[in-house]
Length: 187
Image (tube, rainbow, N blue to C red; front, side):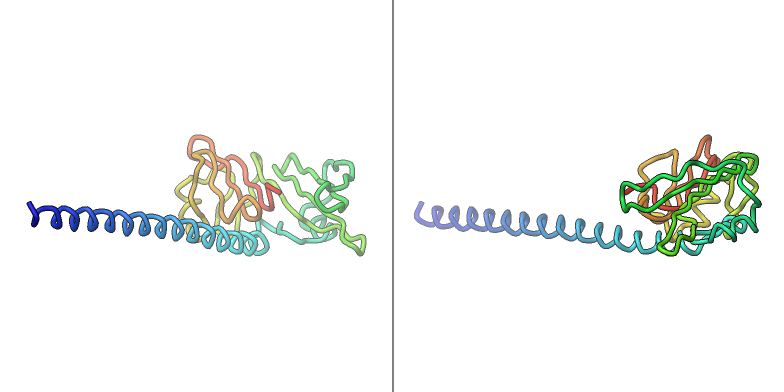
């Protein structure tokens, strides 16, 4: 009996120590996953902003001046009223080209010049990205074309290249692109 008690004590201490190591390892794994997620989100944000700035659909891209847009697309069919952004107080206006399936939003800079801050490509548009993606492209084509810029996808009806804070959102229906938004779709 004297040899069994110390043996039981050693087994209990070893089991408790193993549990502590296991709990510590689980905590470490959780922190690593959280850190990796933040790193991936930061990386996707950078990728998204780069993609947003560098991608073109036809002649349309971010930061074009209103004069450059008129040169590429002609005068808009309609324009929204000028509104003041609640986020940063800048003046914003959207130009619509419904017969071309295109809407372009501009912001007025400190020099009173209007520059593209986002655009929306939809049905009737024949515009394609520099990677050949446009209205009617398949989910598979989008995933191939933007594989390096796509993070985890939580929605079967959209694909986000970069993030919603900066990048490209492809909305799908029946596995085909039905509209595309380039810019920041969330604040």
